[in-house]
Image 1 (cartoon, helix red, strand yellow):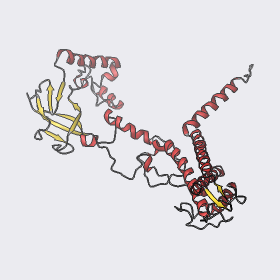
Image 2 (tube, one colour):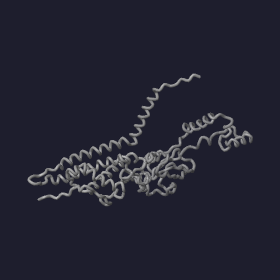
Image 3 (cartoon, rainbow, N blue to C red):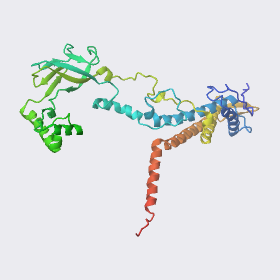
Image 4 (cartoon, rainbow, N blue to C red):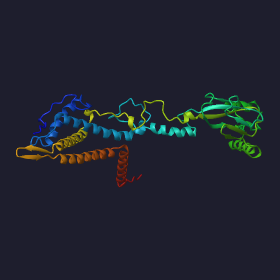
Length: 385
């Protein structure tokens, strides 16, 4: 039984919709290149000396896949270079074939966690609370809402963590004995004119050197630490124990965070870039690809056509002819096509790796070092005055 295999007719006429996905069908440059690549590929595969068992739509599909593969490789490297700058940004803008300005946005997002723990900012709120301290009462239950007030409301259903407790002795400056107070209205007027009138000890700003103030403050603080019971506290679970035992009723303030805020994993804004999967890189515009890229695309399309032809000829390994049969080279075509595909992909990856931001900076550094070495060999002029 004779096998009727469609062969390349020798020409093609492209219409939108002839490719499987139609990614680039409406671009004029792609439409014209489809016909040219189909004709070129058929001739590279042996037409018209030998028949090519492919139709125009097969060549169009190969070109579309080649363009998509090229864009995929380029976009993958761009995502790798720019992801740290893009994370947290909106997914609404297509970044394909656009320059992404390097910035510290992603690094700042990463460092916010450290800032939160260090108390220098962060992504969650730090609230304030206060405890009504009673005379001669040393131990307080932080869950007792009759004496404890929380800025965020009662955290009965939400665990919290105390960050800081403001339980310190009175500042030494307010207990500073000023031997010069009362030296007259002239001194007070002079203090006011310098803006020191509200300070204590104010007169010392004029009469004594600064180190004298520091020594007095230090003496007061050392006296409290050595001769008195130091101000301190012990925090165990929800129980706060104050030292020394309060002698008067007062208020102790504290800072705290809600664990539900601190341990929150997800950002409420779901339309932001999180990782490789939703970085907004789409298919490229074929017309914006330069001739260097299009040459790689044409080569890859030819390899895909060769592979497809090999699969077809592998199905019909032998064709009957009068008094004999013809053995087709499907296996060889598939093997060669796979080798060529691997080679082209490796070549493109090597080029893209060499164009990465890190590689460019290293190249600039090497160029700068080489230029500096050349400049060092230039004799310097000697100026005689």
